[in-house]
Structure formats: C-alpha cells, structure tokens
Image (cartoon, rainbow, N blue to C red; front, top):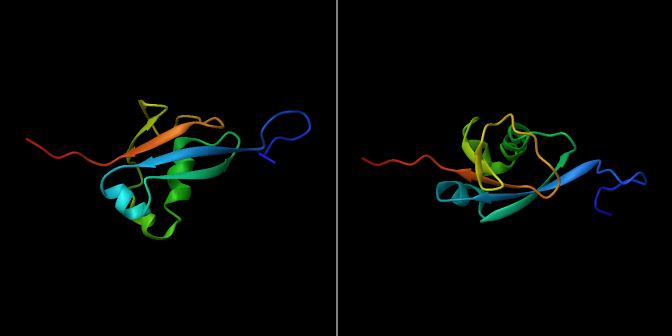
Length: 92
C-alpha cells in the first residue's frame, strides 16, 4: 500500500531526498526516501532528517531545492517530490 486510502487521497507521502558533498557524508547515502504526513513542508522534512543519527548535524535552515528549484523551508511538499539539500558553498 502506498498510503492511499479508499477515497483516493494520500494520507502520507514519500519524498525523495538527495544529499550532496558533506551532507552525503552525513547521510551515508546519495539519496533517501522519507515518508511524511500529507501537508508537510520542506522544513518538516529537515526536522525529520535531523532526528536520524549523524544527520542531527544538519543546520536547521539548510539551502534546498524542491523539484530542482530553490525553495524556502515553508514550501509545501507533495507525494513524489524530490528535495535536494545543498551544502554551503565557499569560494572567492
């Protein structure tokens, strides 16, 4: 069952989460599928990730992209969305 109930709506959603550079090292993977309740935001996803072992080191407000577009933590998510956590970039 994929979280769909008889009325056809999704009571939870699966979000594909991508990690790059130091975040990939913390996650120990390039990507994870995370289940969240319907109506969750990108901020809810970050909070859930921060509950997972080494990912507790994630900043509370990392840069991220939802479906390949930069997005704030307040962005609502939908079943099947892809969220990329983007580490800080240094340079000069």
